[in-house]
Image (cartoon, rainbow, N blue to C red; front, side, top):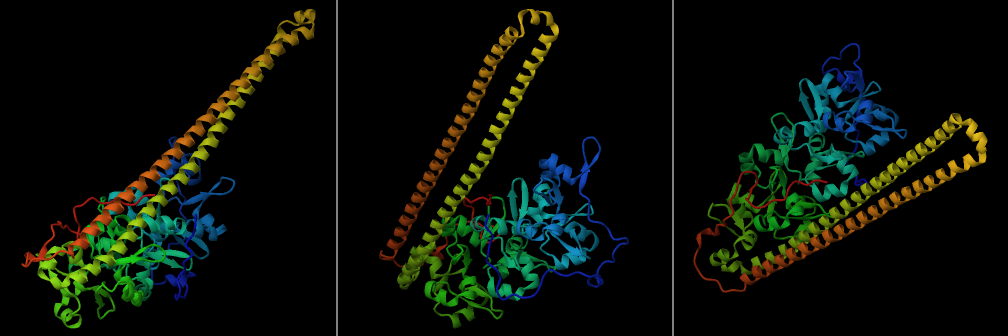
Length: 571
């Protein structure tokens, strides 16, 4: 697995605190004596208490389902140790492989987040907002426990606890960004965050401690603080305060997917660019060097000269807080100012009295626009050509992601197959060895019984004659046993080879099908573009046409359109 090597420039200081007793004077008093770290474990079916090590070694699936918060791992001797053992013995390894083991030191001892929320909850909330979790029955559990046990509750209350499953265990976004960055970029560009001193922190943490840096470098991390001064991303606001978003932040572009999880425009551009082209051509943006789609506000704030050269049709301006808003936003909030300061922003109102610029009309309803504004013809033609390139890039990027995901699954399946193949051969060899040993033991027992039962007969016939009869029969049976073992081994090898060839053929067929679908999609896209261009070559008639309302039903949450959506991304 690769690690993101992108580090934050311009941020200095230390986040991890060297904790001392004085640092907690303002918080909850410490209990006396000092409480120990939690001793994870539970009772088995025989009512005997077993520690976490026993459960992880004997019933790992049960642990993953019931106690994913029992953090730890196996050492080279296959001995399981809890997280605090690893933090004490191999802290660098923990930071690299298990950033999801949340906790901190106090007086030289590392304690997990559960312990902190039990004894110093105020300190934990203030200093570690990145420790996602909540209290259930007076016990704090991390986000992974909630996702595994109370998924519906998380979706309703904390959709900003970003993460996904891997090997039946839920891991938060920091783990994914650190160990599977390419997968995150392809499937979850909406997991906003960045690195600080080698540790990935989500957007709420950045807004808590470095808000100025965020405003300067990531204006595309849309969100705001709630009444408890906890930063919530745009998806949370659209889900619970949609009217507030429509009034204050209609430029937080996005929509709900099939699982009713709000995804920002970048997610849609990377996963469903065709849907964006059809329903939201006003979600302006482009892909950066890391193939992550960034909205126009990000580009205007970070690379304005690049925007002026490559996307002059992204009309907008900065407010008094240096937040960039689109021309539509300005016309909605201060139309007089927009008309005075930006007369070049050509546009008109639709049937719902929502102002849209010429670029929106060029994509959504150019015929009506030309009827009302024939002088827009050249501007709309140029706008369509510019957007054609962006949309073409997005479709190709989507195809590349699909091929990468198919290849990733192929490699993962191949690795699993190799492990299963080796295990099957090992088990078969183990069965053969056991059968051979049993055969030899039986031969020895028969020989011993023969000698004990008829010593006189053996003496009369002579030891050589008796030994020869027994050995000839044994050699014959042994050879037959070896042949059977060889036949069984060869049959297994042949079956495994056939399965591998079948898997290769299936992978090839899937790749060909993806290519076929992509070709069809590109052909359809180009045909649609040709039709758009022809619109500007036809003579236009007069008449108003009622503002050019486009029949696309809207819902709650960033302009939701009842159209087929892509599901939530899953590795």
